[in-house]
Structure formats: structure tokens, C-alpha cells
Image 1 (cartoon, rainbow, N blue to C red):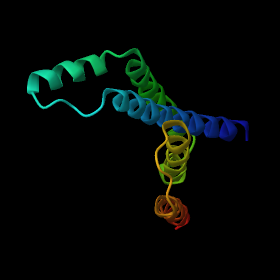
Image 2: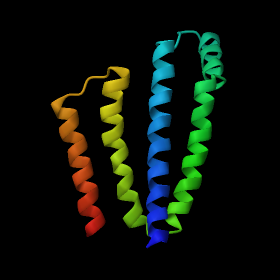
Image 3: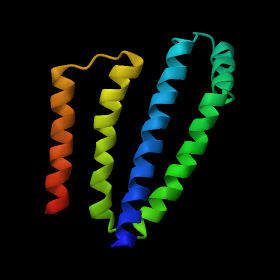
Length: 125
């Protein structure tokens, strides 16, 4: 029982770090605006983005999420654990609206609801 509870902690950690990475990347990229037209300027912008401390924190988060996911899979079957990752769609939808000011439309909310419902159905088959 305690082992399974720890497994859910690994899934939650994976989910949290994954959502963090998506939000931070979008935030930093939005601050830069569209990529410039010239190749030289694109390279300069992309290198500065790669070296950005916030983006660097995403590299660490992705690595941590990978470790947590491996730990989760040591406790659960993949077809049981993976549907939990559909919650990232819900969290990104809500948090990107709240933190980044992205539009939260009925169509998007319905689409994410269908994705989550589909993964629940698929995981129970």
C-alpha cells in the first residue's frame, strides 16, 4: 500500500515537472516575440533562449520528470500510469489561461475533456 502511494507521488512529480516545463518555455518564448527573418538573427535569439536561466531550469525539470517517470513505471503498468499524464492537458489549459493570459474557450475545454475521457476509457479496456 505504501509502495503504491509512493508510485502516485512519482506520477504527480512527473506531471508537475512536465507542466512546469511547458509553461516556462511558453512564457520565455512569448517574451521574445516571433523569430526574426534572417538566419543569423534566428540563431542569436535561439542561442540566447537556450542559455536563458529559466529555460535551463526546464532542462532540469525534464530530466527530473524522466527520473520520476521511470520510478513510477517501476510501480505501475504503463497502461495504468500513462492515462494520468492526460491531466497535463487540463493543467496546461487552466494554468496557461490564468498565468499567461491565453484564451480559455469552450471548444478548448470540451476538447481537453474529450481527451481525458478517452484516456480514462482506454485505460479501463
